[in-house]
Length: 491
Image: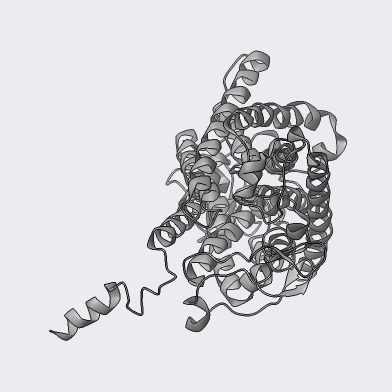
């Protein structure tokens, strides 16, 4: 037998070192596919969505904020973030920081060491620890893409004016001091996990936290330019729909991967995800037609997102009829907060949340967590949750307390994110300004990156390096007093 043939037989042999007895190839394959689907939601999904839903002069900057966050989270995650979220306990809401880089750690069977659930006596095991049938490397990969998309969703509140250097500092700080706390508390074996708060795939850890943190950061960064706030049309609606479609289809991995297994609950989670998203999109569109006489494409995308967000905390815990009800609520309540409450609230008017992340993620995420506390079905709960006899209030038998837990868990996430995001923003602005200077706000991508999304002058702002100054299509006057003349072009 040749050496190549021998090496291949070792790699594929059922008893070889590369295929340990505990490995379930189906589970491992599905978990890596799920992780890749979630990664595709960010890159290219949200990169495309952000780059096309904003005004043309901010297309490059918006897309790059997403791309940078995805890359930065990866390095932070494997260096310290994973174990702060899913490792051994440091505090009831935080894990111990340590790298996830060595092969001894990554090739061992995956386990969440703090996930063992005990009865009230503190000694009798109620539910064993989470110990999936694939390597820790798969778990690190899967959880990393969730962390990355959280930062990218948060960025949606800050598009069109945040200093890119401030964003580069903000990302690792927020991941370290905010995301890891929510992840450990609710998923990694922290106090909310053991108390029985339900968050199947991230309604609180990802969506509520990104919505609240984005709104808080938007307050500290400040608003876009007056001109941009008054008029901010998408530069490419068709590309926006492409990004939205990738986001929707990627949610199969987002919710379908969270049982940590290719099991029956995973199938139900994927089905409920699509049911709720479709219902929410249709309800939002109908409300637009009823009150504004036209179906808005951007509104349909927002309705799709609120449906996906709302079902996330209960995707594998509720029945199909409940997914429809949740879709009806997620298509109407966030619509009401965005279209009615927002216009009447001085605070919401003051804070410039560029893409309305507060409504589409914070409101919808809280709504999903609360309705999960109502509709979580007892048998489905046994397939996923560590606390036995869990159920929603709709099913009686102590389910009312579950609703209280859901609200309390949400309040913890909200308060933590408001405080920590504020502290991070105040710390970052000691180093660099949070908001771009007015000159860059007036010009956009060409000022910030020296690049433009299209080889056309639509917004008309252009930097001429030969004359060391800015030009605007609205004013033929050169912005730099050193130059005496300039040429502008309108397309």
